[in-house]
Length: 105
Image (cartoon, rainbow, N blue to C red; front, top):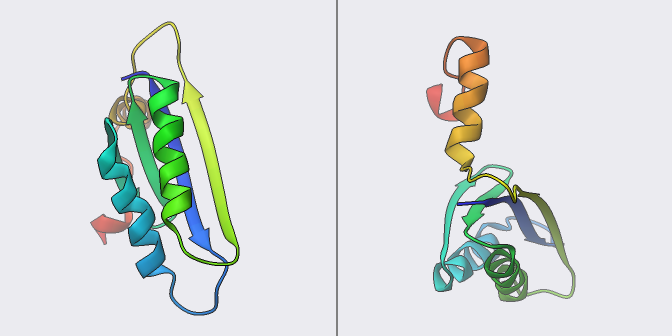
């Protein structure tokens, strides 16, 4: 996969956003993307930018509220294929070990 992105979609509300964030994540299932949700957003991988943008738009629209805040950071490597996992693997190589994660605790 070539396009990797970090997507964060959240309603601007008081209290827990979990149910609305879950709607955004569920909207990704309708697209040809792979994704992994973490505490700060969802990493999305797609074969092309068009599919990624359609998925991100659907996630944004899935959230109810008077105000919705969406952050999208895209890494579109056009000359080589990459994955989110390979990016983490390269950091691990440089560290000489696996990076720590919240799930390690």
